Length: 120
Image 1 (spheres, rainbow, N blue to C red):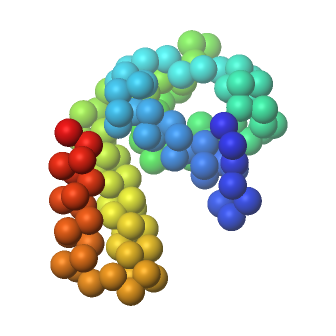
Image 2: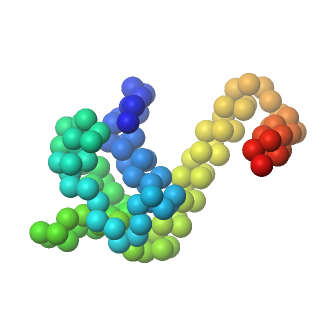
């Protein structure tokens, strides 16, 4: 993973995991990689991954079973809520970017329709 400098690494890793959950790459109830294994695969300090898992657990995105590891939540409502939250953030960033280009809503809608049709 290539990390950007404008957002803390642990937040970028959290976003990656959340995205993997809502897209189905990580399934509900699935055991997550150990902190050490994930740290090695992402080339980050294990303490960073520990913080990620702790934050995700506080957000109820995952849970820990003592001696067994950390698991993705099985709460479908939480996953739906997570999906909505990620979508809201992406739309917000998109709108801000379009405004910075001085595009009005009609131009933006026209562009969205054009790219939607082109991707079919």
